[in-house]
Image (cartoon, rainbow, N blue to C red; front, side, top):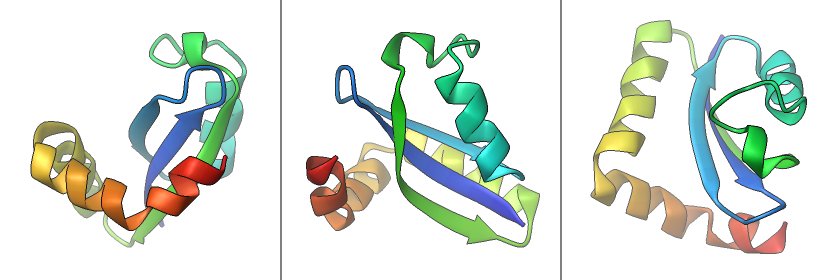
Length: 86
């Protein structure tokens, strides 16, 4: 199983999108402060994820969310309460 996930920084409330085959391990890595792209936002909270059987599909979805403002905007609207509650 592969996952596209959204993290929210508890420090500055920014969002981070990623994909992985091991969501639990990836959360530990992000919150360890050892990841270059997320070390300044520690601690991170998982606010959303999507599961895929194909790694290629997960990778495409992650790229879609990062590249296209409309995809990002629609997702942000869908998870508005989750993003605002943490």
